[in-house]
Image (cartoon, rainbow, N blue to C red):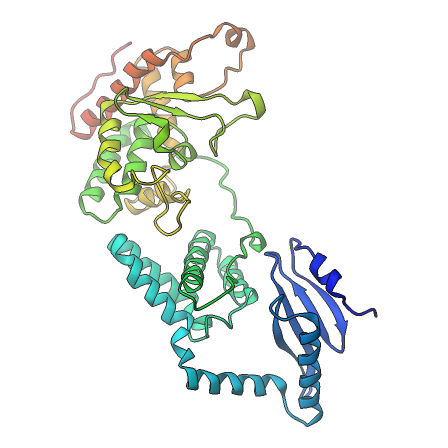
Amino acid sequence: MSKLTDVAIKKAKPEAKSYKMADGGGMYLEVMPNGSKYWRLKYRFGGKEKRLALGVYPEVRLVEARDRREQARKILANGADPSAIKQAAKQAMHQTNDVVSNTFKKLALEFHKVKSPMWTVKHAQQWMVNLEKYALQTIGDRSITDIEPMDIMKIMREMEELGIHETRDRLLQTINSVFKYAIATGRAKLNPAEIRIALAERPKVENFACISPEELPVFLREVTAYQNMDKVSPIAISAFRLLMLTATRTSEVRFSKWADFDLEAGSWIIPAEQTGRKGKGDKRKDHAVPLCSQAVKILHDLYPITGQNEFVFPNRNTTGRVISENTVLKIIETIGYKGKMTGHGFRSLARSILGEMGYRWEALEAMLSHALINQTAAAYVRTSYFEERRDIMQKWADHLDKIEMGAEVIPMRA
């Protein structure tokens, strides 16, 4: 077996799964999906196969890794376990330098204390509940610098087996944030939580649940009651309300930017290149959305909170990212409509109810940013029906307000 070279190690590229590059004598380099490279030594002691971490490349070069391998083999030759010797040395160093203060749990609590004033009470509580339930028993008492990707992968795999993929993703984001905080404060150099590429995909939802028009009044009152309890962040509820009032796609709301809005003109231009837009290549087009007065007010009220950001609905934990795709679903689930309603359901409801009111199908299809299937009709359409849709969207918003208040609304033909 040929031994490793510095050139081969440097050129080794990450793949979808981790792989090993052997050097001989039980030592190998493990290349992780996130590009990290770990030196390890496989050996037997007391009749059991064991592994010893020899360091991380490039901080530990090939020649140094081989030297550490030879030292470990000398320890084995003297009848001792190199892993036990290493752990004893670490414990002594921790006691001497007070490194025990840099455990994952200590840093997680520190990060939570810094960030929780910017969170809702419920989010701050749930953040700690998930961490304590699924992660701290495994990595809580370990030094932040001793935790490796496979330690976190083990936690994620256990959650996948339980079928809690959404909670898994939120927990990974939490763990990721703690390591980024550790790096920012000089307590760590590497982030072993960059393992998203190796996780199993969430099971896909095949259909979009939607309540009936008759259920809508009670649903709206439940939303308002929940909002009045002050248990939901203004960012989340504003995204929810905007989605409901504009009948746009969840991704279009999530990735919206303040630069796309003209509140004085009451318009929102969703760029063709925005994340989540439908269509490919030159078939994608900007989508102009007229804003009703209720939507304009929501955005005016939100601006003091997120106006300093590029995104209208920024993620509370990670700079440069937006709210989760499950933010709207979480509100729906919390008020008791899990499995009965989705964010996409607002589009279905708006299309059905406004259709019953007699508005033209061409304008309603333009409202939903649907491409016309009938090619002959599409060839003659040279308008986005913007002004007509402005009236439609205001009627839709007023209709929602009236039925929530309990008024008997008789659909009027347009």
